[in-house]
Image (cartoon, rainbow, N blue to C red; front, side):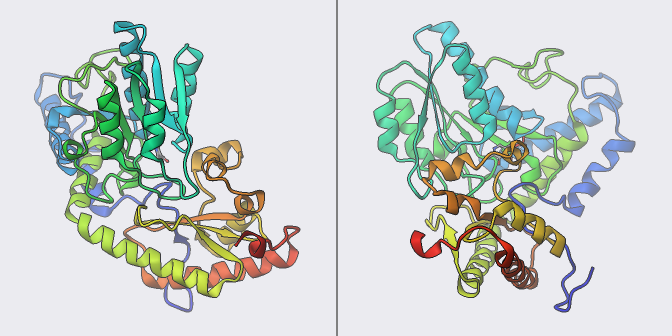
Length: 402
Ligand SMILES: Cc1ncc(COP(=O)(O)O)c(C=O)c1O
C-alpha cells in the first residue's frame, strides 16, 4: 500500500521484537538449504563444507564482540544462551561447593533469565532480584549490598532492557561480582550489533546474543564463554559445540547470523548515530505534536533504537490494534510477556502507576526505517490516539502524573 507521502505501508516499528532479514544475509544462507546440506559432523566433503561455514560464522560473531573463536557456542537463540549460562554455571558451582548457592539477577531482566532463576529457586538456590530506579537503572550499591560474601555463584544482569532500552553499568557490576568470587553473565541480546561491545574490556564471563535482533534469521544465537570457564551442558547428545550444545547444527541459521554480525560490525558507528538521530526525531515530534504523551526513560544511558511512551487516556493494547489497522507495527513491550497478557514487569518495577502502565507504547527503529516513515508514523499515531481518546473509558491523567 502506498501513501500520499510516498512511503508504503505497513511501517515496521517493532525492531526490538525482531528485525527483517537483510538480502545479503539471505543470499549467503541460500546455498546451505540446497547445495550444502551435509551434516557438519560427517567426515566427507559435504560435511567439511558445512563445518567450514560454521567456523567462518564463528569468526564473524567473535570479532563483533572481541573474543576468540572458540569462546563462542552457537545456540537456538538468546533464550537458550541465557538458560545455558545461568543453569550451566549455577548447577556446576553448587556441585563443586554446596555453599555456593546464591544467584542474583534484576527485576527487569528478560523472562528467559527470570524463568531460569525461578526454576533454580525451586531447586533450592537462594535467589535475589536487584531493584531498579524510575529510569530502569540498576545501582551498583544495590549489588554491593546484596553480594555480601563468597556464596554467590553467578550474577546475571541484562546489558540493555528490551522494553525501555536502559543500559546497565556492566563493567562495574562485573568487577563487584568478581571481587566477591562470583561469575558474571550479561544478556546482551538487545545490545550486540547496536553498540560497540568488547567482552574482554567489559570483563564479563558469559554473554548472550541473538541473531534475529540484528537482521539475521530467527532460531539462532550465541553464548560467549570465557576461555577456561567450566560450564555444564543443558542439552545432551552428540557433543557438538565442544559438548556444550548437542544437536546437529542449524547451519543455514548460523551462516546467516555470521553474515548479520559482519554487517553489524561494519555499520556499528553509523548505526548508533543514524538510528539515534531518527529515534530522537520521532520522540521530538511525538512530544511536540501529541497532547498527553510522555517519554518514559530519557536517560542518556539507553540503547539507540528504543523509544518508550505513555499516551494517557488510552489502553496500549487498543492502541496497538488500532495502529496495526492503520499500517503501523508497534508494541507495548516484550513480545514474550504479551503472550501471557500480563502487565509489564519492567514498568511495574520502575514504579509506574496504573495509568502510566496502561497507555504504554514501545516504538523501536531498525536500519531499514526512513525519516519519511517516521513522519508518516507520527501522523498515523496522532490520528489513532484522537480516535481512541474519543471513545476511551480511561481518564486523561497526564496532568496528575507530570
Ligand atoms: C533482552 C532479551 N533477552 C533474550 C531474548 C530472547 O531471545 P530469542 O528470541 O533469540 O530467544 C530477547 C528477545 O526478545 C530479549 O529481548
